[in-house]
Length: 122
Length: 107
Image 1 (cartoon, rainbow over the protein chains, first blue to last red):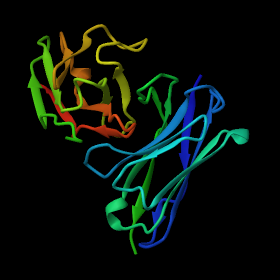
Image 2: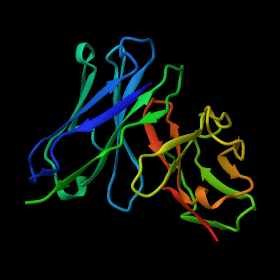
Image 3: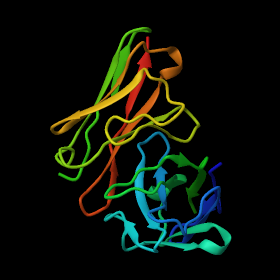
Image 4: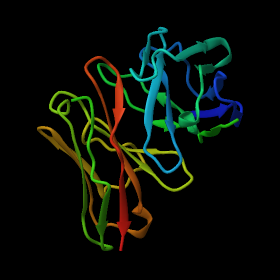
């Protein structure tokens, strides 16, 4: 059974760096074509894709966040970490991590964590 | 264009068929995926690769794509289907995008 859980601070000050951890079980990031993605959702607004990391350490980032976003993984402890620098109030929202099943030429999220709400405020 | 467009809202009476569209220039070449999100919950995958249904998703949910428009059709709509629905696709660069979401109201 695949599960994912996001953890990290609920409150971040403007200009600080947000670090969120996605802890997962039921799959391995050593398996071909498997990945983990990050998605966020401002209150009352639409989903926004942030980025993803694949089993082979390939990473893809949203063009709008590429300069601020880093995603890393630690296969040995089944974790993926998101770092978003220079936080501002527009980054407030619920952050989700999600599992990407192995596929070719496309990707999607078949299972999601419950999300964690991050508020950016001074 | 690097965007997916959905109608903000769709309303339907119970038992009828709801159709939610998703339009984008990349859709003729890329698959569309659909997610359902109920208030306070994480999204759930409903359709992948335009028309395939994950195990456990009711048969009344169907998807298809023609040209630049993908459609999620929900036949025999039930009250429990009231939710926000998002389409998603992948640009040829590998980067992803979501539509703006459609709120389905069951009258």
